[in-house]
Every structure is written in C-alpha cells, then in structure tokens.
Length: 249
Image (tube, rainbow, N blue to C red):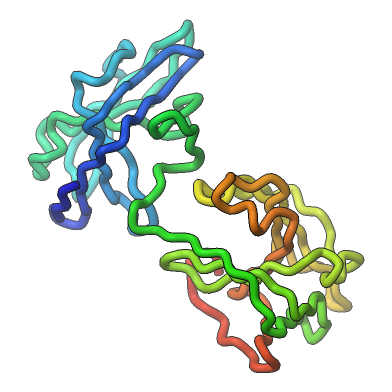
C-alpha cells in the first residue's frame, strides 16, 4: 500500500478486489483500485480505465479546484442508464488521476470489497472502531431533564469522532423519545433508526439513534441507544462532558 499527497487531496493504493454492479451487471472489477480522499472524512475509489466493463457515454463536464476539469459519463449496464455517474480527469494537474475513472457511489446499485458488500462509502483503512463494555455511570440530560442513566454503558471509540455512549433501552426514558423519519447510514456500523427528544420546551430533533441490525463487526451495539454528545449534556461519573465540535453538531 502506497501513500501520496497531491495538492489538497491524499492518494493511496488499495490491495482489495473492488466490484460495482448496476442493473445486476458488473460495472467495474478491479484489484488495483486507488483510494482518494476528496473529503477529509472518508475516501472514494478511483479505478484504472481498463477495469471498467460498463459502457460509458460522454454526457458533460465537471470542475474541481484541486483536481481540474473532468469529463462526465453516463453508465449503461443491465438495461439501466445512470447519467453523469462516472467521471475522468484526463488533464488533471494531479498526474496520478489522469488514467483513472471514478463512479458516483450512489449511482451504482451495489459495491463489494472482496465478497462483502459495503455501504455509504469505501471504508477508510485508518478508521478503527472499538466497542467496549463499561461500568462508568453515564447520564444524559436534555434541557435539564434526565433522559437516560446507566452504569452499564457500552462505549464506542471511532477514529476521528468523540466517544459514543450506547445505553440499554431499559435505561432510557423511551416515553420521551419520538421516532424520527431520519435514517442514517454508516459503513462501519450499518443503518440506524433515529429519535427526537420531547421535553417541556418542545421537541428537539434527531438527538438519539440505535442500530437494530448492525454490521457483523459492530454487533455489540445492537439495540442500544446513543445520543449526540454535540447537542446535549452527558455526565460521566457525575462529571459534565464538554460538547465536542464535529460535522454532526
């Protein structure tokens, strides 16, 4: 695995076999994919043009301040057409990108790393998730109202994010939680249902979540409820925690 930084983005080779499908047909099959951190939070895959097996039809252009001018392509496979679903920076100031093709992640029906389906975006090789049982006392307050309290929390440590405190539902005031239409997705944990919290001052949206059926590596948090540290007060062993600043705040 090699790493390089070009301009404002980071580039790294991957040894995983990566495949994408559209309409049940293979779009790309690659064992030499390149991870490109276009955003600071997670990477995306770029592929050698020779590993693209779908039909690509030029349908526009796009511009990136760091990557330059791109050609965009409609992708055709399995009787389906996805417009502007792929792009290529043939004359990019970043030479390493010129012979590579990137697909819009959501324009493809399914992605696989080796034989495991992955969701949301490629998994960052530098992100680690540790899930540990704890006996620390955790109390969650919203507008001065205790919404949850437990001495049996499960702590989830994820690279680049604050610790998340997952609590048993029996230790949460579920009568104060109202189901939300918001659904969140995480490549490391799965799909989460979300709740808003009702207090005397009204309803505060999307403060809590739970993974009913998390991905296998995160099974320890199945059915447990967590709260956004950024948006409410959490006490650990009776000490008020500072609200972290993240893109979830």
